[in-house]
Length: 208
Image 1 (tube, rainbow, N blue to C red):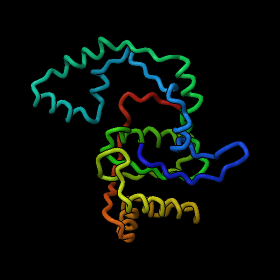
Image 2 (cartoon, rainbow, N blue to C red):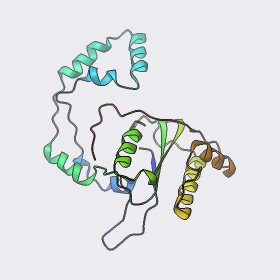
Image 3 (tube, rainbow, N blue to C red):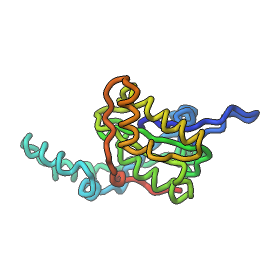
Image 4 (cartoon, one colour):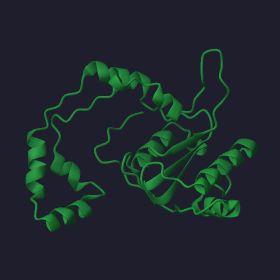
């Protein structure tokens, strides 16, 4: 998903005190917990609300292919049903609550080909509903690829998080302008922070 930079507390007798959805927490989830269901999905309807609809439509047109036929075929064969036990395991171990215990700064490339940047919209909504919005900041880089951050981008993010932890305030450092200025001052290479607001994730199931 990008980098989540949580201010993690020290280990306790019962294990790590982690921020919701930290990378360490995700690694602890057994792979067998992940399951998906396509049964009953109308792919044409989903595609109509996709932020990539125009680009995909143009590519199909250029290739001389029938997009509507492919969407109909996907819908006709949408028969995968999720394993109830896997869903329960996933809910018990990995469903984010949005309740943050410590400050968190998310860094996400807007061209993430592995974890769509629209995840940030849904996650931000979940955190706000849980009343933890003041602990979360989300920043974006005009880059392609998963976690494709330069050294200066990562260090600027860490400086913003350090300021929040030490002063109790985000200030302007966690904004695109503030992060860009910090990255420039570090002289560690290029940075491509950008003002960006992703839309909802297509097909996402609301939780919380």
